[in-house]
Amino acid sequence: MAVVTVSGQPGCRTREVAQLAAQRLGFTHISADRLDALLAEEFGPIVEANSRTWPDMAASILLRLATEAHLVIGVDGAEHFFHNFPALLRIRVVAPENRRIGNIMLDDRLDRPSARESLLRREAEIRRTRKARFGRAAPPPDSFDLIVNAESLDGAHMAAFIESAALHRDLTAHGFLSRAAEAQLQFQIRLRLAKHGIQPRGLASLHRVQFGHPSEEIFANLLDFYRIAWEYEPRSFPIAWDEHGRVLEAFTPDFFLPESNLYVELTTMKQSLVTRKNRKIRLLREIYPHINIQVFYQKDLQDLVLKYGLIQLPAGGAS
Amino acid sequence: MKTPAMPMLDRVLFTEDEIRASLLEVAARISDRYKDGNLKLIGVLKGSVFFLTALARELTIPVKIDFLAISSFSNRSGAPGVVRIAKDLDESIEGEDVLLVEDIVDTGFTARYLLQTLAGRGPNSIALCTMLDRSARRIVPLQIDFRCFEIPDRFVIGCGLDYKQLYRNLNFIGVLKPDQA
Image 1 (tube, rainbow over the protein chains, first blue to last red):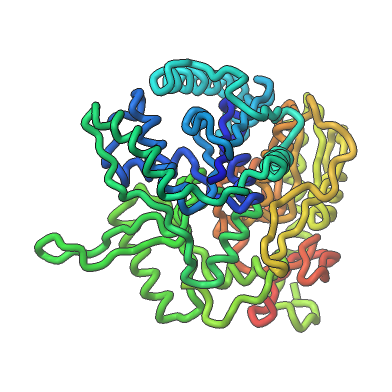
Image 2 (image 1 turned 90 degrees about the horizontal axis):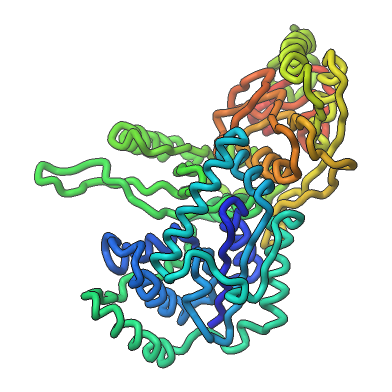
């Protein structure tokens, strides 16, 4: 079991660093959003997000995932999850306030005073959450193995440092966490959670991405190239029901881009399939007007193939 | 305008005169916006060279110019890696009013990456100008501060835009025939 934890000051684009590091190492990236989704899958609606039980709830899931994958955990406070673990690398991303304000200005299209205000708000929120979960508002520097400064390093540089540190530490030497070791660690966690009436259900798991079509994989690679976080088919939307309220038809967009809060659907060249798909998308927009969805037609993808010099798409196009 | 005798060309989308008229309008707005500023135009190689130089000639304010290039995505060898700056700026942009100049913005991937990268280098302000905006293909939300034309979802060439590295030098913007694109 190899675990790299990446946390950072707000405005440092820590998520991007964690994502790139996972990409370079071939590890599974667990972002805060993904961990929230896993927690909901495992425990149902989470009411303990800001309590001392949250770290145990998160750790019980992450330990199980570690039996099948090496992890990069981009969650604030994750450095506390696996105390004294041998194959653990804890990273902290920091940057001067000016740099972080600049990032927020651009990411949220804010002017400097508003970006500063937003930064202060986020810092206060993180301090509150850390205090509630771990008993300390700020992590001491010795909680980390490596602290990187985003003032002069971009995401790719930091990811390269992390990769190099992980390789030199030989993090993956012992393979994944054994089932026996997991069971032993889970026992203690279950005991603590039981005091609060919380019981892990063993439901949360990693769904390895199996793309429905090669063009979807090309699109995912393109998103990775531009460091854009994505999820593959994360949600299905019911679009037709029978008189008893049973779902007759659902629509599952191909990608979700959490940073843009946008679903993306890739479509086929075949006109009959396009027509059917367009109908579903129209229904989705009518029933869920708050959902943003962008349709990316096969023609658009072909133009990207031309523009970026990608391999030719196979005949038949996307799903 | 009569379509030039180019077999791969479907039609002319914007003539040289139309491009110039729009460019003059955008140049006037930029000159006005940055009249008290410290403007630096940053072009993205290679596509924006033609538009940037034409635009710069019409500005009525002093302006600095710099260029950068990014690595290209290729899926041929399996893992595509991540985007990086292949040719960096020659000078610092700290404290300057940066205007990133693109030939075309479609998905927004490149512009987003470049804006993020440049914003981290301490400019006084940062904005985006593009000759063509193909917003029908936008995936990443972007604020475009100056644009000459909104264009339909077609493959276009000319004024810096290429097809297999050709036709950048056309003085008009044309649509490639569907069977070519």
